[in-house]
Image (cartoon, rainbow, N blue to C red; front, top):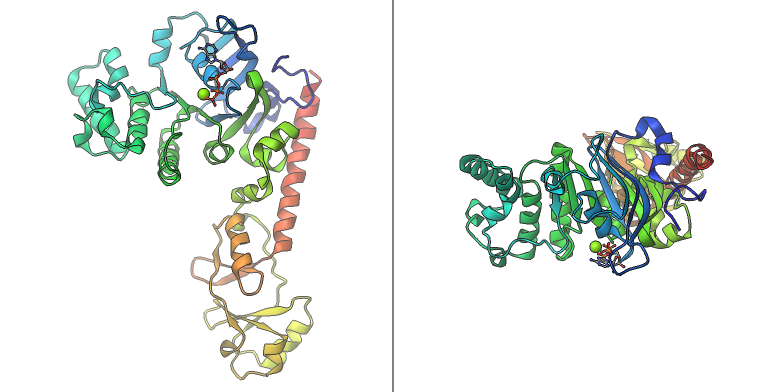
Length: 411
Ligand SMILES: Nc1ncnc2c1ncn2[C@@H]1O[C@H](COP(=O)(O)OP(=O)(O)OP(=O)(O)O)[C@@H](O)[C@H]1O
Ligand SMILES: [Mg+2]
């Protein structure tokens, strides 16, 4: 069995060059790379073709033992491939001195792996020292990285065992960034920490990456982390076979086979809602809306003419104010702002559709009202709008595979 393009449902990454316009340059390319460990007959990684896009986070995700760490270690030749080629920035590095290669690639190892008998400063300075930087330059870099990672300067002289798990993870990342390498390999860098700290480290790291624009290969076995961190995701099966390689949005909208669907698990549709924002969709404007100074009789005519069960009343500033139904209006209130139920919360245009879903489930009326920055009413998101968007996302992803993958699958 190989992970090359033999199956029509096996979109190896080089097939995705068919997507052309949206794919960045390749920084590292694994070409037919196989690793069989000494004493094993079954390869841990089998004929892997993988293009790692420049300036992005590529997440390798897959079940335990499928070969993620092995793949990562092959990239910087911590372990030697049994066969195949590794191209780094256009250069065949399959047989260059691996020490030189490793100085160009930062590595955050699974279980953090700080050197226990070295101080935090010495840990962070590992690669700069190997590169022969002078003391002042190293010291400045260590100070800078502690600051970037949100760690106090007086951690310099501490030892790894004097840090919390989350702090040690940050030092691990700082060490990998030591010599400002273009490429970072991260093996479950936020693995063994509590969910809240983990969430914070992920957010900090994403913010950092939006400035650094490193080429990053990030390994995890957690699909939610993959969806959050990845610009692209490679879902791996046994022996690092690539089951699907794509953006998180498209994988969620269109898992290519049962293996991927099972791995993503239930709720993939809902997770996909995180990738769309209210401002990017058509928000229903046909919803019945009246101004606060409308008479109850007039408002009733508006509601009667609409299929909806309630209407929205806007206040003098055009902010959503009240939901009124048939019964509220039948009592012909003199002041619409004193009738019905209050609109207790609204959605900004930059909210995600996941936020919108939460909002409409919580709202009194089963819809979410959208407002601009000054709180002025813009439209309504209801369950039908969301269903349409989801259908659209699925159809677009399916079309993408029909156009780009089927044709490439022939080659
Ligand atoms: N040094 C080694 N010698 C022999 N076999 C190894 C060695 N390292 C890993 N393996 C085997 O290679 C396969 C892939 O291991 P690898 O560590 O790459 O998996 P992984 O996907 O990173 O798993 P996890 O999610 O548990 O970290 C496994 O079957 C493992 O037992
Ligand atoms: Mg591993």
